[in-house]
Structures are given as structure tokens and as C-alpha cells.
Image: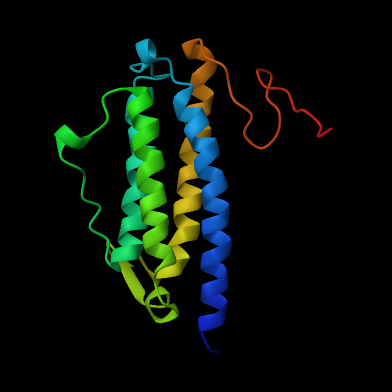
Length: 172
């Protein structure tokens, strides 16, 4: 059995980056819905705070994309001075960095996208396939964060259809 072909991996990258671009827009709306004064909310003593979860989503998405582009995962955190301090700054940081990272991944050759990358002894997949892992990880935690919003006094944005707070609107 042969592995993925160069043509397949180039098409896969395009499909995943197009989908991730849409997911990033949804994630930005969920992040932006965090009330600044309630960032320390946590639904359970063992849960992350809303701010910790928001940073985990944004930072890990960027770390994964940079790891794919670098063909090596380091998962290095930015310096404390470079971390966003407010919800609005976090949304802007996430937007800028995901666009930057996507451009870096878009520039990779088929050979680079097919390069096996070891992920801390857990996975060893072709670089492009980590785009799927990134997507699933981000969606999982975004859903978790979305459940925090109403108890914090915020509104839940439309994610894949209407929500109580943003009902589905049919196209005119």
C-alpha cells in the first residue's frame, strides 16, 4: 500500500486551510464574546478559567500551525510581554497569527507536506495531516468555551447555525 501522493497532499492542504479560515472566524466570535470582567469564570474548580481556555485555544492553534510550517513541533510559548492582555487584544493576536501561519503552511511544497513529523512521542504523521488534528482540537475547546458564555452573562454567537442569541437567518 502506498502513502498519500503529492497531488493529494496539496489538495488536502488547500481544503484544510480553507476550512480552518472559516473556523478561525467562528473562533474569533466566541473569543470576543468573553466578558472582560468575567475572564476568571470557571464552571468547576477543576476546569480552566475562561481566559486560560481562550489562551489555550489561540496559542495552541498558532503553535500547531507554526510547527507544521517549521516541520518540527516545539510548542514554544511567546514571551510574557508579547501575550495579549485583554479579550480584544487576544482576538487581534489570534487573527494576525493564524493568517501569518496559514501563509507559511500554504508556501510548503508537497515534499515538505509529506514529511513525517514526530509529535512528542504520540504521533508521527505527514506534516499536512496535523491540520486535521489542529482543526479538531480547536473545535473541541471552542465548544467548551462556548458553554461558559451564558453563565458569564454573555451571548452565544452562531457557530454552525443559529443559537438562541443569534437565531439562524435564511438568505434572502
